[in-house]
Image: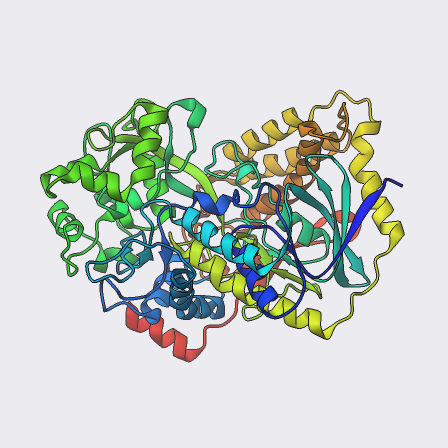
Length: 603
């Protein structure tokens, strides 16, 4: 058996983004020992790429905002497939988490009287996003990371977890490898928190960083946890489309929150063509109404560019498919037009959107204060993930918790912009709190050497094969196939083909061989990532095939309307005998009468 180094912790947290760091802080404050594993370097988690802001009903810009409005907006945006208890907790606790970050040193932009400034964002009725220019995620990670380090949390950087370990039905640790040396590590823990983020690298065009290969989804699934809502993959409407070398890089919704408008090749603001009934009462009917909103009239109705992401993405795809797209297959996003309304607009744009200004200047040689940007949809976020208890974040596997993007329930069929960052700290805190409590009430359990040996043999198997199957080629084929067959707009024949192709690719991936040693071996790393990617992509395709309707981020050509029955169920995937995926329909949690009244009042 390959050698390994052993580590023991009360709570092991896998993932060092916003959710993982916040969980580590809460668990350490509870007095337990905490181990934190991150796939890249500490501070490089994908959370740093979140730009627009953190949604919290502070009411600093518009005092009509409160948790009830935020709750109703979240439920409406999620097409009422949300776990209503999670949406309630999120809306109530997000303001405290924002003020907590401020107390820990986060330097939010300020109002004239010194309070946290908030900006408009898609799907939010009032200005709600606390922000730091367009670098909010970076500031969040900086703040949480500093706090975590000073608490003395044991951090394992550039370490990838490849399997969870169980003692009977309970999770008691994990097997991992050091990406630099290739050496194995075994973690023994009383409880494990999964906070590994998203799945964007399963698609060819994505805003996600290289780490986002759905590790947590796959680890929890193989450990016996249920995945829900995997069909709901959010395609952010605005990613860069040119030059090709940077296609997919995010163009923050903050551009539209600060007044950016979308135009087609004819120069027309096409978003006025299709405003959903759910939002007609609060969306501008004319450009003039939208202008008044941008220039500070809080009673004006918001521009249609700030409708929910799924809707804006589909409208952009329609313009491109009907021949009204930009030269490189997108549409035009114009923030420079605000010169007509705002004095010193160029300085205003550079102050509010510094990253966007430099991103386009350096990567596309384009000045966004003078010229429109070319943008198009990019794979951005998955609403689906591990099923968790709303209050504790525990999965249905004892000892296993999940938080952040890899956990499901809060966002329903579509996430509102800015809810992701507040999701991380609200439920990261809860996961850390209850994981620590569980650890205090349980012994460490037993690690079984035969299972550790089996995991290590499977991990090293690619080095023993002489196959010509290339893990990079298989990964690229998977990403292209998912983009084309299970992308923004779906239909049965293409998704059926995708499922069949995933099975073929899985057989090929089981035979890949790699050369060289274990140190700095990207071929080996990709072979391991493939194991996870082929697991959750099948879950996405199976769930999307079963949901025969269009709702939120799931859009089907063959079933363009909503189905009232399907609007009351979550698609649930579990690993069955022989590793085969088993799909079922689970009724969503019924909305209590007091919360239902809030939804009705806010409409």
